[in-house]
Amino acid sequence: MLLSRLFRIFAHENLFIIMEQNINKYIAVAYQLYTIENGNRELVEEAPEEQPFQFISGFGFALEDFEKQMVGLEQGGKFDFTLTKEQAYGDFFPDRVVDVEREIFTINGHFDHENVFTGAILPLQNEEGQRFYGKVLEIADDHVKIDLNHPLAGKELNFVGHVVETREATNEEIQSLLNHMSGEGCGCGCHDCGEGCDHDHHDHEGGCGCGHCH
Image 1 (spheres, rainbow, N blue to C red):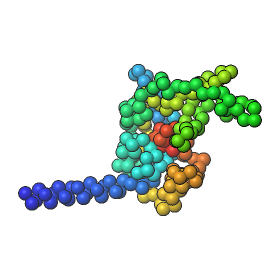
Image 2: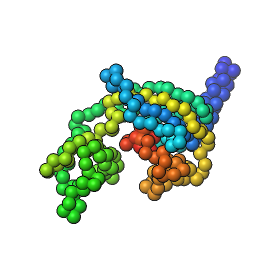
Image 3: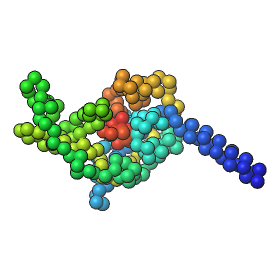
């Protein structure tokens, strides 16, 4: 009885240690992302080894189930796994396709054609200050039709690739990420804001593994 209790305590403590080891890990991965819909597989995103997707574990910047797959792998480890739509970005909701008044995108009496065009992904913010992305579907005389669903909503995601680097994150990388979360900088564990921050696989909300950093 005592031995059994000690074993449970030992097992619990080891599980805690393992969980702790998986937090604040800097992970860089090269991958190809395929969507699976109605039996069809399509390549939609690629993070090459020269510009891998980078994130720090434990901060929610990558999809939870994507991160679970990554934290247990060593450098050079290969992976090939599929996330269900529930594990990824959920269902596609038709009511999230909305018409927004065209004048909202007008600056000094001129419509912002440079940034607002069919197919453009726009950073938006609601009255509560929540930030999200929307895809422009149509521009009419009096409104702009925007899809607020995640671009990968309703689809299974197949990730195929390998781990480029995995190690404990530095204090500087963690601080950079915290600055980013508070709106003060890039973060995401990236060494360069122009590299690896746009693969929103991940959080990509606006990404995939990262959460558009994907």
